[in-house]
Length: 110
Length: 123
Image 1 (tube, rainbow over the protein chains, first blue to last red):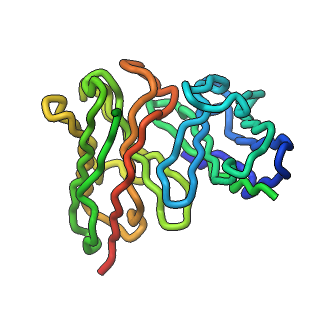
Image 2 (tube, rainbow over the protein chains, first blue to last red):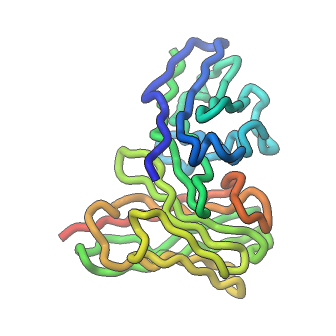
């Protein structure tokens, strides 16, 4: 149950697009379309932004999109806004009814 | 509205026990799987445990297996986490979270989270 690997930080200017990667193995990300992404502002609970790799829950902006290729999932934020500044975590089903989170990425809006 | 409220956190000595509770409201509690997720100070999220909608299936992270027990009381709309043999590395904010879809065997994601309860293991 090793954590999925994410870049420690990603930054972009308002209006730009950024992509956060989430690299696992063929035992988790690569084997299941059960990757979700969470946004967490300081001192707050996480909020789901993407589930099942590409699906967006009701109420989440369509500026957020997800994808997967092999053992790597990605979250793209387009039209970056100041309120997008937060920590982002991926999470994947890891087999045996267990789950694993990513290491987390701090997004900075310049 | 849909809500999860954790309680039971506190300061506890190493080796002692603590039980966390998570009270749910605003949804049909007995039809959703539930998770515990924790976050150590300044660190990332760590999945801890999951329980199926009917309580018949329970699974744990290796780091807590054999020490923590997840359970639920569907008559009281409450989720629990019994934590035994606590260690310093169990110090964290503990969140309960609800499966996004009802009755699934594998969680697609967690759509409702509590505000968290803080557990500090220290002598």
